[in-house]
Length: 154
Image 1 (cartoon, rainbow, N blue to C red):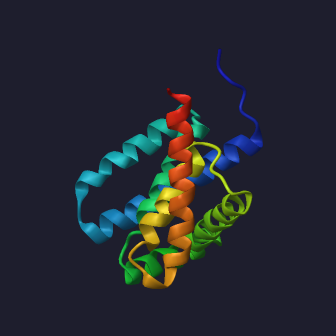
Image 2: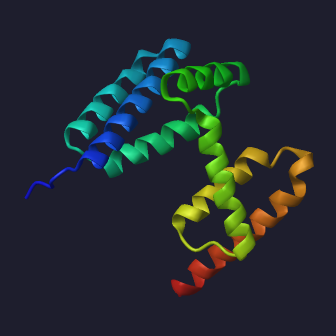
């Protein structure tokens, strides 16, 4: 049975498709790596299936990957995104930081998504000596979550 798609669903799906394609086009242009063209096919197939969940996953993965660009290229991409969409990766990062703050405040990781979010943050900041306190707190949360999962699996 095919799902009825409402206007809001279609608007988000369309936005994500355009955002994802913008990032892929930028990455192809900068890297001159045509093997990234496969992402166009994946994005198109996901869009044609009206798979909003899949499109959100692509969005999340591309945003995280784009944040690893050299600073000059990241700034250039952010300018492109701001011009085209009125927002950029900085807002995405700010949302993630707000989520991380909520997790730290409650004092534990509740699920796999929160675990990945914290783990990604640790990977971003671990080499920065000015972030040692944050790294220590986040590593403690990760360790406690792993122990909790291990205890459930026993």
